[in-house]
Length: 178
Image (cartoon, rainbow, N blue to C red):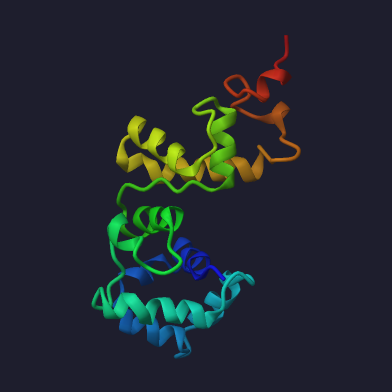
């Protein structure tokens, strides 16, 4: 029932430009004006949310409180129903090109394996990385960790032998060639 998950996916790919459009146009697209946006929202929802919950999110606070514009600050984004820090960071980073470090399961795993933190608490990890990296690099760094986690550093069976980070990774060091 996390409408934010579908909303984030909507923003992430080819649809991220919609967030800058007026909420009137976005709402019109969601209701189906032949643009295909409704089908894309349904596909992105992937069983996590319903199209109605995405519509409710957009029509609710975004229209009533933010005059039809998706908020562009962490504080305001966190007031939206179903939006947590990860979603807010994705929106800030991808849609508004502002500093934002989304922490998902891949990012958490990678930061712990690389010894950046012993904690796997997303807020602590976000804070640690925010303090060490320039804001304009945060979103890309998160994406790189996600892509690497998906492609090479799988949770159950990491491909450490083929990993370019194995020499600095706590798990990968086991696979160093002597």
